[in-house]
Length: 367
Image (cartoon, rainbow, N blue to C red):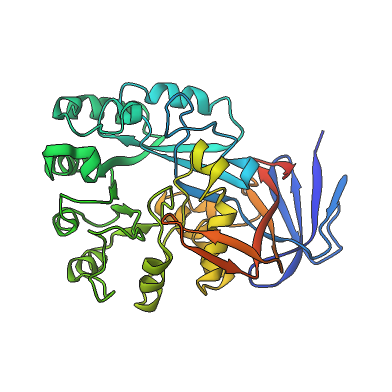
């Protein structure tokens, strides 16, 4: 029996009001307002925007690990996110457990495989090179190629210890062998950020690119480093990865003033920063970019179109008849909100993005 329902009077980020009809989990009609027909009518009365389902490119969704872990659906569909990408919580030792957990969740899940086999079981996972095994990584990547989208290397001093750039050099070698891009976490040095940038190539991801620590991507005058601009020309991808320690309002302002493009906005969310901040949700993180002066369409593209393109899954970033329905419904309310960055700096915004519901693989869930 056909399950047919209508999301009535919803707005696109181009400010066009439509009815969206879904049947048997797929988008079957994009109709004029008040014309869509179905067994259920869910009328948003033009008080909600609709986009393809939000994609959070950097989360930690392996709940067995602390401090960097959480339940998949708690940071997924319940927060308006239909697809999450776990950013290296697990290595070859536990990736199969993450996959098993993902099969029990409603949220769509992909992952970056940590190049350290222990993953985030410890937070200095690259301090011992014995935990890096190229052959094991290649075997796991081949086995789970539909789940693993890239390799994760956390290249900051607290993670690599005395090993400097060597873990990244090993990661580069493994990346070349597996034909998978790297997501590279940047933070406090050593190693120096310029050495990190030199090892990156097209489609590699720099996550935490807006952090405010020393060793960031801007000089003391607030200008992008020449090595950063050179890496941009090579085609690296920039990911926010807010987290507890990796998003700075002043750094983000510098990036906007110098025309650094907005690629993907992500949270680096896990249980602690979801419950106690400063992250809370992807919606709150997106609101910070409204505060910074970005257009709503550009902000939403950063968690839909841009993320889907990087994942080579364009169907996740569009609203097209015939596609499985993964959608996020949200409002932009005229409501003052206090926003806090990872350094404790507070800003106030007069608009707030709030999630109203999702459609995950054809199922509507009110949030």
